[in-house]
Image (cartoon, rainbow, N blue to C red; front, side, top):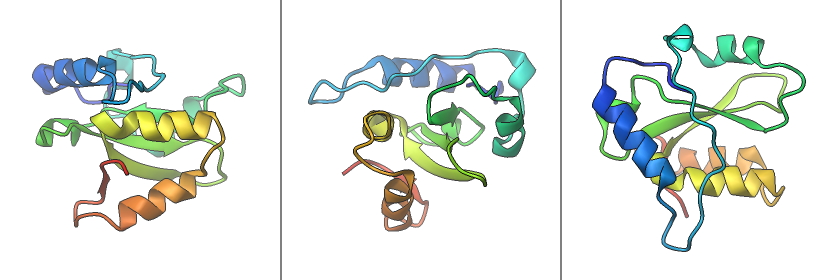
Length: 127
């Protein structure tokens, strides 16, 4: 979900990155939402908008941080929790979180733990 509209180039690059399979052929199952109604949307506010019928465990926000790096780090919000839980992930590694959570191979906490152990920027870049 696009929440920042200041950098059209970053949005285009993100769209391209998410449509490119990993070297092993994996893709994140995402639906791109480009709607100015969501400009400035925060994880807390996003949780209030999600209906009970939404079945996916994640919401991915393309916020202002996406355009600050060639890795296009999106904010992944976990929806199966009482509190807001997020992890920043490079677009090319989004498939690993989405695929593993959708298949129940891993828990969201696993990805938060990996992100806590990466560079100072806290971006998960894959395994």
